[in-house]
Length: 208
Image 1: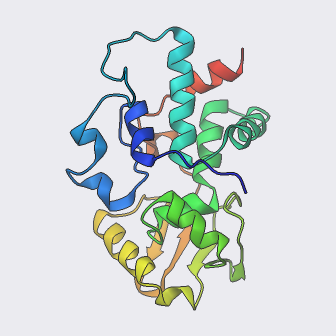
Image 2 (image 1 turned 135 degrees about the vertical axis):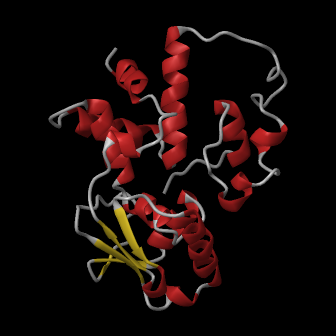
């Protein structure tokens, strides 16, 4: 399966903010943004003004990198979101947040979305008691997500759960850390999601 192999810290530097792609490292002073907050490459430190299209493109790339999607996957999700009732940008964010790999990450079963995606692919996650190994699987309110019995013994999952539980969970998720299990209570509202994301720029880009 195709995936983005670009260095994760370079992706954050290119977008000029933390995308939290490397787990615990992003919360330390070793984070690349803390040390070199300018784009990578020979001309990274030059001041350059973006055009309107450039601003829209950077916002789309940022959102795509946060959730670890390739361009074709992201565009397909946008097409589905555009066919839904309501605000297209908000629907897109809700679909991204409802992905199984994202919920696995948010529940603390992986230190990053990339690690959570790997756990899902390796049959480490159960949805409503059934094994699901599709990272893009869309969860519905009320669905339960649980670490499979064998995977509960993995030290990295235990460490990730311990780290995440210390930072807390979104209100739209309910997590039982002792049981390695959680519930997707409801689809997050726009107010529950990061204000640093400007999804309207992505809609404007794809609407051209």
